Length: 248
Image (cartoon, rainbow, N blue to C red):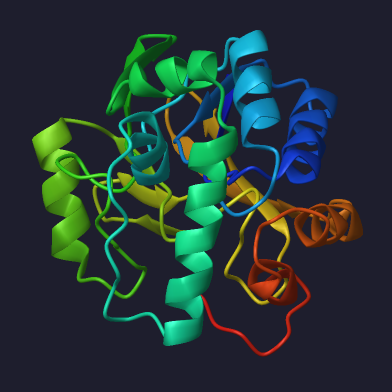
């Protein structure tokens, strides 16, 4: 049996990341992978990036990482309210201002996706890791999508499991042939009502793969205080408090 932990979308939330890494360690899981979006929306983008580097955790290039690394202009999104649009511009500008050149370079060199192969007994399992899809790191795929979309992705990747993040909403789908499409949710900016930090554990046996979405509490007040004491808009602390703001 082999276990791996997969997490995504930390978004500068160091207290949440520390809690997830501690939970993974306590479970004795040594294989860890991050699907990207280390920065934006909480004030510890540098510290999160440096922790991922220090622990040698393989990490993908999320859309926010790419924007910060290459100074890509922020484009308003039609689905956002005026309030969220303004908050988003300020929060991303904060990341661009404070990210170090060393961390910016690290982000710029992250791979777009990774394919893993694990041998358990006589069985080889192929695990495809993406931020949001095989061809884009900014495509929103939700649990409500038709199964065929995920089945086609699995076929294109020639994989038994495809694991993704980006939407900040976890789900897992197993298909008739035993393959899986899984969203591991978000560590630092969950859009689920409970706002818990979320990650995925995959257990690989010779005859099957099983998947568990783990959701844990973290020092939320520490993150809220960090946002409110920074130049990041309080819009994002209000969201973590489950006040009446909506993020898409």
